[in-house]
Amino acid sequence: MSLQLRALGYKVLPIRTPTVPAGTERLRFSLSASMDVSDIDGVVNAIKSIMK
Image: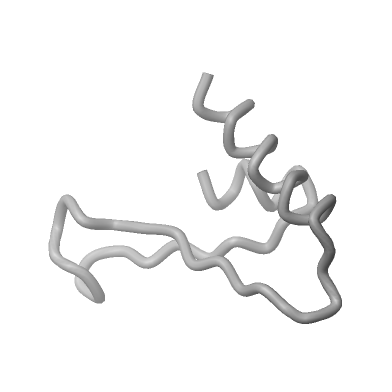
């Protein structure tokens, strides 16, 4: 999913085993004060489109 989001223009880093236990892998999002609601909506919509 990290690579798919990167292809859509979002830098979302994967956190994988062995950093976290197997089966609990996750994505790392970083927010900044310069972002607005449309930025957050964009990444949420990108995740929704990938999850379909």
